Image (cartoon, rainbow over all chains, first blue to last red):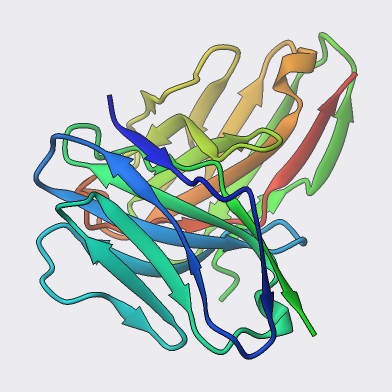
Length: 115
Length: 116
């Protein structure tokens, strides 16, 4: 079965420091997509970054980068130079080729940025 | 452009009542989705519509029906609400609708539903 695991229910980081949010997955599929979404306290789901399973380079979007280690089946989100506005819940999600219609979500990590 | 809009933002129902959640998008995307998010969990797919005129079940379809009214609108109906349907409901869209692993889904702001 396809599964996403986020082992950090909560994380704290000092403003301006970098933070890594962990995500591991379990699949036998060769083709899949990895996504990270941010959910602030206002509740909306904001798309942050995408990594394809065949992409050789790690994805980057501004202060967000994805540390993709295919052999270890991990797709950690790195946020550089944390800002107070980064405080939110972060979800790792995947689309697998076998059930590509559905985004499968992890349980999320609550990030708090401290001033 | 408004992107993906959902109405209402918040609703309280009594057990057994019915209601329809509305979703509309102005991005000309082909596919639309309904998810629910329960406390402490990620989102789970209820129904989706790959293109206008088609709908299919997702992971948790029981107790729900959907209608893809046109390319822009996708509604979710609860015929007889139950407390177990208390949740936050999200509508999402994607551009091509091919359902490939590479496609990104974009979410609306959500509807908070409380069933007493």
